[in-house]
Image (cartoon, rainbow, N blue to C red; front, side):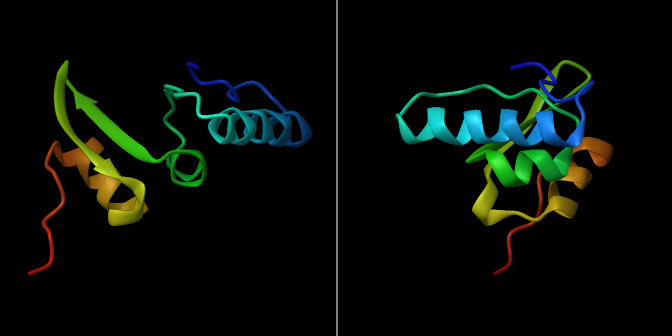
Length: 83
C-alpha cells in the first residue's frame, strides 16, 4: 500500500487502519509505504528506511522509537543500540 491514507479523512483513515490490522490477523504480509511515522509505529511490525536509493536499515518497531526512525530518515544512519 503506497500512502494509503494520504488523501483520506479521519474516519476513512481509521477504516484503512482496521483493514490492515484485520489482514495482519489473517497472517497476510503487507508492505506499507508511508512518510507518516506515527502510522508506521501503530500499524507495522518492521520499518525499513531508504535514503537516496540505498537501504539504511530495517528495524523491528518494538525495538525503536519514532525518533530513531526519523534519525534514519534524516541522517541516513541506523540507531545506536544501548549497551
